Image 1 (cartoon, rainbow, N blue to C red):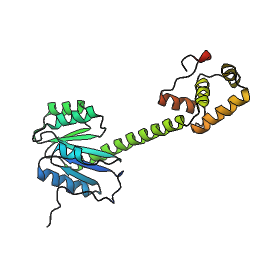
Image 2 (cartoon, helix red, strand yellow):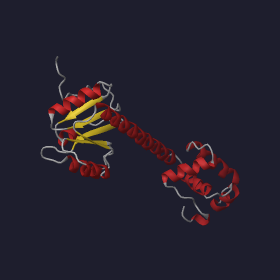
Image 3 (cartoon, rainbow, N blue to C red):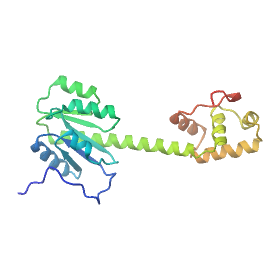
Image 4 (cartoon, rainbow, N blue to C red):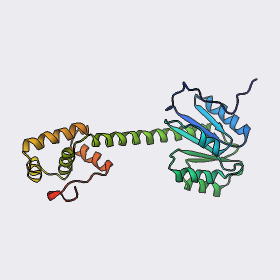
Length: 226
């Protein structure tokens, strides 16, 4: 039977936001075994012999997971994981090692790893860990997209609408806001309506929650903390 190569060039026709599993292990046999296992359940897999190869590869914008060997030639997998954390790369990591022990597993989990397996591991355990990692990364990406959408919505407000929003968040009535801003109550009402529409806020509590997510503080009378 013809074996599948351990590395391949990604087809440019593949979507860049598809789920993908990255495997970094200097053992060719392990790379091949994981490639076959993960592809058997329909997952896209990219395998690498070294951390440098992984870093040079264009990464997917979609949910992903890194399966990382603890002991690599030239660089510790634990040290590389710390580099990833320090760089701000947010990707779930599943560690594996042929020399695993409890102390090493605890250290990996404390460093932010999602799971830790000693070789040989059960195929289903690895598949379950990967599924969990992809689900978790999907949640993170969805939360980041929602926050980016909120930021864009807030930036679409005019300076005056932002000021009105600040007073609205403080609980002031339209009449009180009009007095603070030296505007007519009708004008404030129009701006308030624009704020609710642009922020896609269904209610005041919804607007407050969105403002809290963005770190926007209410305006107090006389413009304090606005």
